[in-house]
Image (tube, rainbow, N blue to C red; front, side):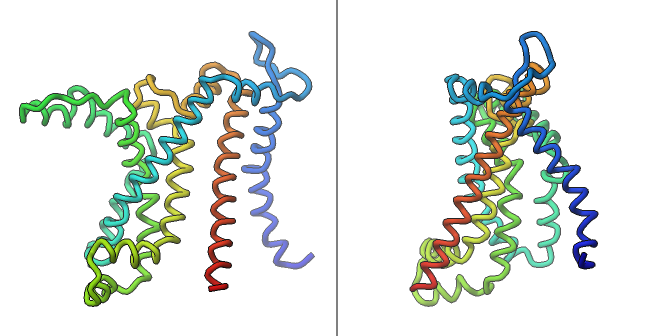
Length: 281
């Protein structure tokens, strides 16, 4: 056996124990059922969990709602992250490291702390409504609403969009905007026809990260939704942790993995097609 293979064996063994074995157990459990009132898995395999998932209008609605939240969160994060990333690359100067460290705070602190922070900001007695009362404006109900959940999701996963964009935009010349403006291009055209096309690798990478994180999130929707709005992640958590229906929770997890896999496959195929078209041109 080549020495290089021997060096890989510890990592392969660890991956098999930590990732492959749990995944295979999850996949097999999704095809099992539980007898009513029992936690024991019944013998045999069946598609009952998947049939229940796609035949029940409630779960279909939850799936579509989660997909909509993921798309909206990705789009809003992209709109906010582009100017932020460009500012960090071009204008931040010696404060670039500090700004990047601040962008990492929501990621390194986990999903719970940012969600609790947003809970105090958007609550009935929080900062937002408190400021509205001081200015004589009507209060806004954000907790338990789709808007509140989306705000929390964008705040939690915005760094996943900013960091790939910073990495991509850092490779562009700093005077790119000035050069385009000197040729008569307005600012909007510079962003649309120059910066955005060159930043597409970061846009794609960040969009995939934000979409996948949003689709599988359950802490932020559970806290900010106040239990009134179900998402795919919260339903899977409830089925596994409260209802103790592990086969059905496993089926939900497998569907989420399949959705993420299909997204990545579509992006891979689209990227290859785009590269081939550029090569032909």
